[in-house]
Length: 140
Image 1: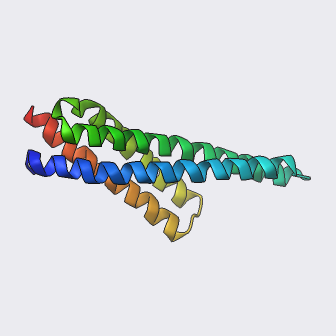
Image 2 (image 1 turned 90 degrees about the vertical axis):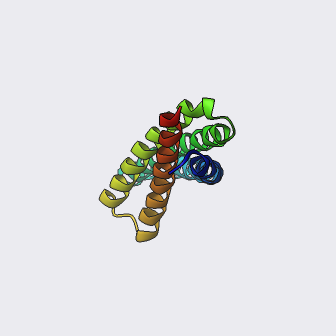
């Protein structure tokens, strides 16, 4: 892969990362609010436990969304100026780690196939950003 192709990949998938990051943050906030309401209205220990799990998953989603958002912003910046490639490269690594953890937790938690495919899509975006950033980093 050459530098020009890598810059295009960074721009396209950086924009997708920004969109996905914002969406995940919004859904994570909704999940957090729903889990908080469920916890406040819980009448049994079992309901309280479910509310805690929802809150934990929502917090994890918001953190993953923030990583994706920052990864996207850094990628778009690096696509225009290759001297800013290191933050994109670092956040791509964090995105890959976050994506792998997300897929493992989705599979272990018995999530439906749509959720697992969504997590795999997010992982693919991070892998492509990492490969493009790594190409630009090595050419410098």
